[in-house]
Length: 96
Image (tube, rainbow, N blue to C red; front, side, top):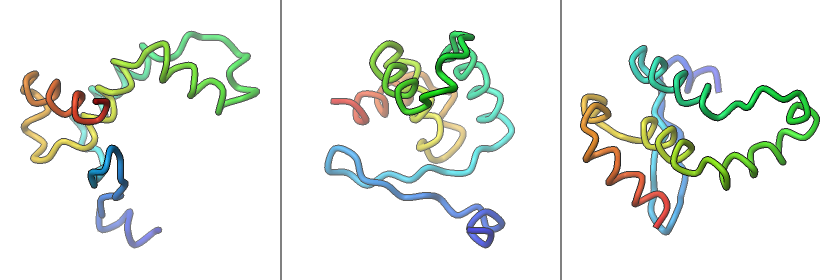
C-alpha cells in the first residue's frame, strides 16, 4: 500500500460492467472535492455512530453530489474536470 501511495498508482474498480480507476487527487481536485464534501455533511453527530448508514443515506439523498465527487476522481486527463460536459458524461456512465 505504501508503494502504491508513493507511486500514485490508481485504484481500479468495476462498476456497471466497466473498469474504472480512482486516481490520487491533485491539489485542484482536492479543492473541488472539499466543496462537495461540505455539501454532503449535514452536521449531525448521529452519523458518526453508523458510518455505513450515513453513506447509504448520502448516496440516496444526495446522489448528484456523490456522482460528481466520484467523477472528479476518475476523469483522466485531469484538465477535463473543468469541462462540465465531460463531468456530466462520466456521471451518467457511473449511474445509468
